[in-house]
Length: 512
Ligand SMILES: Nc1nc2c(c(=O)[nH]1)N[C@H]1C(S)=C(S)[C@@H](COP(=O)(O)O)O[C@H]1N2
Ligand SMILES: [Mo]
Image (cartoon, rainbow, N blue to C red; front, side, top):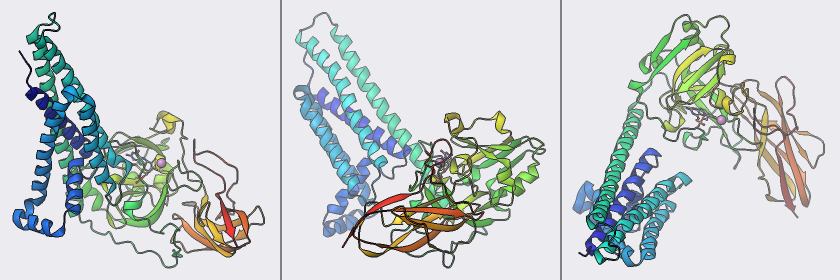
């Protein structure tokens, strides 16, 4: 009995299918906007002459994209069959084939406007699945052939054949499973995106950058960080997709009255809005893990007061839908600062990545102890009774922000022309405020800079000055002083356990 070439082609197609299905699932779960096949289809469409595209649109109407994807799938099916047959005698050729297909997807992703590393993950998943699946199936096919050729009479022929079919069935099962996961995850995301798009929240106004807050200097951070550019930090491998209608927040623990809020309950309360700068405790001196936005939401002080915290409570353990936790000082949530359950950022409902539909924002605290995205539970408690996600990993229990400043113009390592050089950047000390920013050249005297306006003490402030630099290498440093008159320390501290300190220092070479 001979195994037909057909079974090798079949193994190739099955391996191809499982790789495609799992890459599709990976794309949906990781919220990569499109699966590799769709990215390739789009890249293909971009490269196609306009007249052909127009013909396709006219001929196939709205189905033109589907037909393109279908065409690619057909091409892939044939290619997988060929690669499967090749694998019988020339394993390496099949591997080169898989890598070439993955390479096309990589090129298509690179051609997109803003590819991020995560966009390549589905391709890697697909390629690995192709190789592993074909290796397993090929192994059983080879044994089957050996038995058929009578090389190894010790093995029962039916037995090895059965093994091949079991492996093939499992591969097909994985492919179906991947397809299903991809569909489900993708549709949950699409539904959440859709409800976010349709959401209208009463009382939310569009941001309006305060007069004089921005010096409009190129390469200095925009005073208002666009939501799409706002830094992202979370432990959620799969971002929660919560529909507002399904969202609830339970406030319980050391309270007189437990409260459960629905989304409707929340947004029918009085809306508070303000400019607030949020930063990460992991931000290195001079780093980018900081952003400033117009946040809209409902003040937590009033809600917590209704719940009635009991004597002795000093903390609120917040939990997100994905199980992340943080411990926030009860005082910071109840004093006069604008600690809120935010529903909008920059005048639009929160982006899913930034906590849709509801997250916490507390001016003056690092994100890791306060800014819970996808928040669903608040337990009023005591610090000595809780351990939160990061405090269990060596980070400090309390995370008040530290005063900081950075130089954004010139950039570290820049070459500039001798003479008057503009030096500018931002400084921040949320909920205390910055009163002065000074720069120092080559360790000389500290020189004051001009500060832009700020609407409150919770935002960053832009600063600028000019320094006179002559030819050669120079070092520029910056330090801020807070509104209580305390200057930022030059002592260097690591981000662990409670935030970096030290003066941001840059080197420039000045040309004649
Ligand atoms: N659910 C959840 N919320 C979270 C986190 C997280 O890992 N999970 N990380 C926190 C940290 S460390 C920071 S700095 C801020 C960042 O918020 P952003 O991603 O919207 O900029 O979110 C906070 N909220
Ligand atoms: Mo953070």
